[in-house]
Every structure is written in structure tokens, then in C-alpha cells.
Image 1 (tube, rainbow, N blue to C red):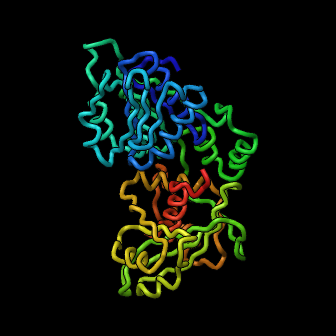
Image 2: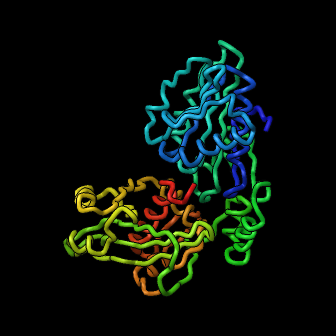
Length: 385
């Protein structure tokens, strides 16, 4: 991509290759101008390791540039050995870490916002104000943006798609642009065409389109899956007989076939901690991803030998959407006896603008627990990557 525009906006379907193209551009741009450094932004710093950092490291290897770049995990950064130029990673959950970035050679002239629909507009404008000046030497400031399509009410769609207020060069990518996708991968997306055409247009063709309907598609199953890794999810509620229930799910994750088998284990607002403990597997073999709303209970269960992995609750809309999108990459099967889970998933809807809503404020606690389990399993590397 030789485009020298101030802003490049790359929108596209999941696995369309847009991130690889932007990573290639960053690497080539830095090698062509030794004064250019780059910061990569996501809504949370912790998301980088398995996404943007991994993509850049893979592209460096594909381009056979390992002798030119040093790829570091501590701190998380990539450096050009000969010049000291750096690619650093930051999250909008710590905006102060972006301010005042200083480099031993050159300045900040490249910013890559990945999954910008998870980042609010004020953060975007604050961070782009951190560019270094260009009067001292010849270097252009350039903003690179990558995202999957989001709801039609997203500020990103208005500012970059509908009105293009930043004057960006806009590119759209589909699964057919990714030459590395196998026939099996493409067939997986093509199945959506007859099942959910709006989702096919969004996830395969990268169109900014939503229709009112279910967030998740699912089928029911009976029995107990065998030979598939399992993980548990726990969403803390109240124990006094009123308010939100505590929700527990057991999830079998088949990353080869991209299938989830989900079973409801607990769902009550009157369970004492010892009763909850009796529902959970003890020992190190099975991970239990629990939200952090009840730190005392999490600590007590860990003390008793339960493999509790606290998951910070996604307080922002963007982070919830990220978790939802991850689950949507799987075929979901719900145990036919999981009555409350079937009720929640059946009323978990998109509205006309593509925002997630619930019918008559139906609870979504089991769905939160399911999201914690799968997201935790994915980001901690349990998927074998």
C-alpha cells in the first residue's frame, strides 16, 4: 500500500487480511525513513499481544526481516536494530501512556488504531494530537485505522464512511482479498449466506449492515462432549435472594471445528459461597474465568484450590462487542436442559442500528459468563497458539 494520505481507513470483514496489509505498510515505511517511529493503539493494552503485536511479528518473519528487527516481549515493542526506531503498543485504558512518547531517534509519525470501533472519538482525537512535528526533518505524519464493521450508529461510520470528516483514504476488504484463507475457511463464511444473509454481508463482505435479529445463532444438543477442552465461566450476582443472580456455565471449546458446547450449571441469587464452590471443579486442570465484581469470593475460592482466573468486566460497549464477535466466530450449541441460558440467548438482539439490546430487559448473566469463559480461554493462549 503506497498511499501517502494523512489518514488511511481500512474497513473489512474478519480475516480479510486488512491488518496484515497495514502491518506491512508500517514496516516498509519505517525502513524507508529512519526518523519514523510508530505507536499501535487498542482499547486495552492487554489486547495487543495476541493481535497487533502477533501480526507485526508474523509479517516480519514472512518478509524475512528477522535480522533487521528485534521483537521484544518485555517490554512489548519492536525495534529496528540499526537505527533504534521503535514500534510501541499502548491502550486507551491508560491514555497517559500515550502522551509525551519520546524516541531516541526521530519522532512519532505513525499511529495505527486497531479495532477503532472499540475506541471513543475523544481518545482518537487526543492521541492523534500526539504526533511529532515535521519541521526538523522530512517525515509525514500518518494515521492508519483498521476495523470490522460495527453498528450503523457508531461514530466511526459517521466520521469515516458517511461523511468522511477526516478526509481519509477509505479501503474495504473482504475474505476474498485474503490469499492465505483455505477453502475450508471460505466455506465456513459461505455457509452464512443461506443462514443469515445480513451477517454474511457483514462478516464475509465487510459491509456496514445490520438487521434486527438475534446476536447469536445456536442449536441445542444432549449428552456430554468428550475429548474437547473445557473451561468455566462465572458471573457474580447477589446471594441474598434479590437482585442479579450468580451465573455459572461450563463450555467445551473445539477450536479445530470452531464449535462451542455450552451448559448452564448454576443460576440463582440465593446461593451461599459454599454452595457455589460445590458446583465448580477443583484443581488446576480446569480454568474458571470469573468477573472481578466479587474479589473476596474469588480470593477465597483460589485459597481453597479452585483455578479462578479473574476477568475484568468489560465496562465499555466496545469491549463487550469484541467479546461478542469472538463468540460469533463459533457455531454455538446449547444444552437442551439449560432453560435459563436458552431464554437469555433467545432474547439477546440487535436493534435496527446494530446495537445489542435485550427484549424487555431480559437478563444476560449466563451470556456474560459464557463470554468470560471463551474470551478468557482465547486470550490466555489455551487455544494452542
